[in-house]
Image 1 (cartoon, rainbow over the protein chains, first blue to last red):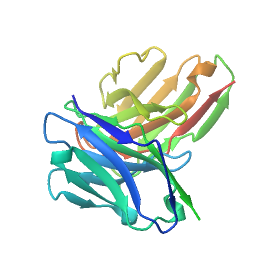
Image 2 (image 1 turned 60 degrees about the horizontal axis):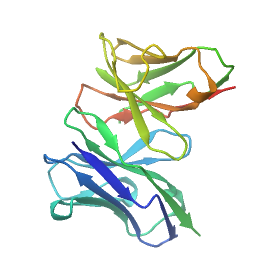
Image 3 (image 1 turned 45 degrees about the horizontal axis):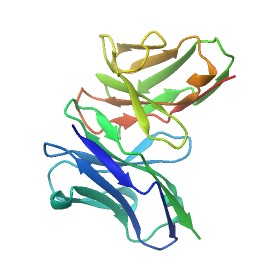
Length: 112
Length: 116
């Protein structure tokens, strides 16, 4: 069965600092992986997705993620945090029945 | 890009009331829609998958008589919380895709349901 684990429920960075949100996956087949962002009282917005093409995936708002099979990881990064990046971030994987399985979420706090 | 509209965004009602939430795909035909529930500071929990013209498939532990789902057209699915009680208070989010298994899903902005 597929699953994802997000390490760190809360990450705090200073504005302008590197953002690193960790996600490890478990899958018996090549996974389809996603990162979503959720702002307060809103739905989810797709940041980026990995579908077995390039291992380095670029998304919206300057975010990118690298698929590393050897580490079963799909960490999300952004070189320089902006105050508007403060939100909840979810890593997700597609199950073998086509359903999205979400990680526990990571709250990103950006300090001025 | 694909847009999914969810209505209402917030509803407050008395215990025992039934509440209907609508999920519409505005610029594409959604064969499949998903309903999620999200508790504060937690992840999304899939409640059910609805396919246009057929009965919804509910996840284990979700009461289908409590959470009625209708997907009568390719652009509209509704979730009705029947005889709502305070423990049903939550954030409900829908998503839609062109067909089952199609990714990514497009999410609505959610409905904050508060039962007094």
